[in-house]
Length: 202
Image (tube, rainbow, N blue to C red; front, side, top):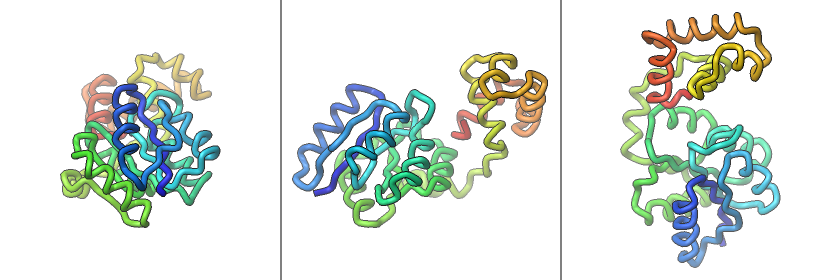
């Protein structure tokens, strides 16, 4: 029996996936959570063989950040990422986090079931529609700190609020934002957010 942890913030999709996987005789959903922050605590309790994680989830950790922590805390758990968008930048981040699989939510149900079985068996799974795009994508030019700053700016936070949340000075945050706009060849902060979001860098 393959024990599965499922993380998906949309209730309807999460319920549908639990029902779908429950039809398989060799799969058991041992936990279903709705945020990235709940992934690791739940995994440490239920000890799943495979964690199926949505990338875009609310909370401090998105699916990819949760995957990285899970890899450190419970290395025996295999990780299969799901996304509705298929941004090549997300794929690059997923590969960097050493996840075992990456599938689109638009994939047929049998592909997800097969993907879970494959990663549980030690194989790696990659949505074929993303493979070529990932090789062609430029590497993320943003440092982790710049990405943090831009992520908060994307939420509408001003420089002083970003400074408070990241324990920086407002001047340092403004310098980061200027550097980010330059690196991304953006017209302004809003354009930088758009470019980085579309690439999956934030």
